Length: 319
Image (cartoon, rainbow, N blue to C red):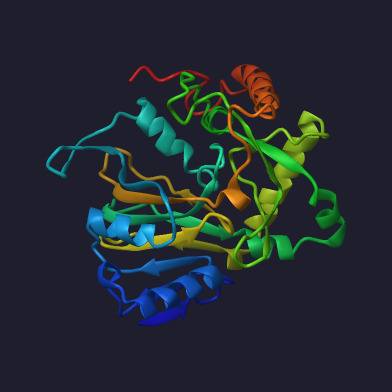
């Protein structure tokens, strides 16, 4: 097994000479150590089965979900992919929304620890995945900014991000990711396993308590701009079929890149649930949840009139 840091970047490594479907304990220990150090690992040419995806993810903890299609196509009962979803469908609206920088599942009570994607079919152009190191970004902050944000938090909601980024207003449903809750999370995350601080921001974050709406938007935008202002903190991965990418949601942001949406793009996604000790905000039954609901409802009401110029023009999907 060979672990090679990504050239000219402050994070990330490529791992070769190993089969994720048949790891020894020693190999896994080396992979986990590298994962915590580098933030993400690329495993080219693995061609993992669904069972392999699940088994590898489970070595890191309980799964939020395993081997789920992340695709612009409908997956059929025989495992093949069929029709391409229409751009106006909710599935594609959600896919397009994920082209903005984010961390997985911060809109749930327990945010994700880490996640992986395995490439099945990729377009000839576009559709890459970018990652950004928020640990290095935090380290680059001046002391005044570090002190300012140390005790600040922001609400996280995918209803907010869909509306704000692309003008999409999905129907609210408690059984979906558009559930009407907003979870308060600190702007500065301390990694449970490494103790390293990072910026915990991204598209789902809004409404910093104690700041005006304008001040909150300005601060969150400025912090994100800082993260991506240095190319050594950004890696763009050009997918090849069989690739597997595994990243730490507690240390990085990521996003999908645009492509010709009429062309197939199918990835298999597995997400590891966070440790409640460090990733739990609160549950909907907790009295603290009410403030999040109220903040989200107020924000969405304003965004209804502010996002008519976005891709989906402040509408809801009909498909």
